[in-house]
Amino acid sequence: MDTSKKHIVLETKNLTIGYQQKKTKKVIASDLNLAIEKGTFIALLGENGIGKSTLLRTISKVQNQLSGAVFLNDKNLKEYNNKELATNLSLVLTERLPESQLTVFELIALGRQPYTNWVDALSEYDIEKINTAIKLTEVAHLKDNRFYELSDGQLQRVLIARALAQDTDVIILDEPTAHLDMHHTYKIFQLLKNLVETTQKTIIISTHQINLAIEIVDELIVMTKDAVFSGKTENLIEQNKLDNLFPKEILSFNKRLGQFTISKDN
Amino acid sequence: MKNKTYTKQFILLLILVVFLCFVNISLGSVSIPFKDIFAIFLGDETVKDSWQTIILNFRLPKAITAILVGSGLSISGLLMQTLFRNPLAGPFVLGISSGASIGVALLILGSSFFGSFLFLESSSWSIAIASSLGSFLVLSAVILAANKVRNTMSILIIGLMFGSFTAAIISVLSYFSEAQQIQQYVFWSFGSLGNLSWDELTVFISIYLIGFIGVFAIIKPLNSLLLGEKYAKSLGINIKQSRIIILAITSLLTGVITAFSGPIAFIGLAVPHIAKLIFTTSNHKILIPATAITGAIVLLICDIIAQLPTVEYTLPINAITSLFGAPVVIWLLIRKKKMYI
Image (tube, rainbow over all chains, first blue to last red; front, side, top):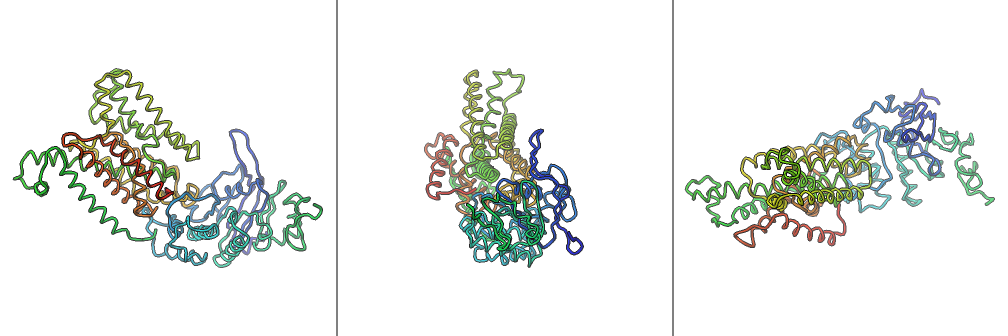
């Protein structure tokens, strides 16, 4: 990959991910060498249980790797403390939020915690960042609502706003469209795409919306049982790397359409 | 967080605290006119000496104790509810109070069981220390268990199990104890806001203040914990450290309160919900002072109720808080249909 033009924000070197249980290691994927540039929108694809979440958890330091290393802005992830990491990488998770009475504004404002003082007082700069995030995600009209009043689509936007307010180079979203209908799924993809273009942040999502991802994102990371491929979407299609994503007798990749279709023989 | 102002609510509640304080102080076996109470507080030496003693050495310490106990237990409950992200958590449910009870039981009842060489005397000081140690140990055990199981419901059940476990040990100890010691323990377990000298109160206030100031240092982790531990960590919070601080503060506050006033039920569980209902916020910057003031009000009211029926006797405070607390929790659940952490 040509690295001379753009800055590499996230890089993995001979990374092996998996779980360590007592003495036995369960390897999920090994020798991953990914290089992710600043300002790209990346989708992580793969069937259920292939290890997408494990990979995301490993590159966001929620879970340890079995071997190899992850570099965030040229610094080994191991050398980051929580607070420092929080200013470089933010997360949007799939798990439900505990039931509290937080308003949308308060929830987004929590994204400023890595920068605020010990009593969490917001400076003018913090407010500015929060308002920018609110504007970019178009949730201004929801500002004073409680977050539990929102629809799934609105809540997802608010959670993205929170990650934006955190003002990190990299934002990782675990299945951001999991509970959304087709229309809202598309809107979230468009929003993320726009954010990458306007803010030059790097956004990595895991998703099952493969056809949408192929159409919208810049690069793909494709996890299959045998190997992990990554690169620009059109290059991966050209090299027939998407063919093995699902069992061919059920779903096959139609190169002409650039989409997965249900196999005709069924 | 957003600077919505809650000044009005705070001023109203503070006025209520002062008012209830006076009502509380004016009640008792000897009736002292309001104007003389004011005079005593203003330093008027001409008021009857016995009245001065009653007000300054008995009723005032009692009112202060009510405020400390009410606010301290309520804050502990709030911290537990946020830490475990469970609206049913509280110092009592999680077995902390039973920890304090077993500490005191070992001290008072255990002296006959293990021989008195272990314990020099059951003075109020050693009761305080035993109670704090007990609550800290049980809380640590609950936390160790909490680290193993992630499910918050399981943690609450574990807390309740610790409660029955300690209750069983106390039963065994009582079985082997003498009537006088059992009586001493039972009276302690009724809870009492009175009987504290200024010396004891000074220690109480000092330890309470350490915990109370500590609470303000953890506003930030408490607020991010509202999103769950994973988000809190991704916001730069050191989860393990925060958890230890939250638990240390809780056991310090609950420990010292239970030590001086006995195991007082329900306040820790019910009051945070009343505060959340009045202030409709989850922001701990507002919620912590709000819960503290509400707790003080509730316990002052409970103490007033305890003194009402007869002039000669006061009812055990623990009975009043439960009589008051249980219906409130039921009413809240029926009315709101939903409880927030």
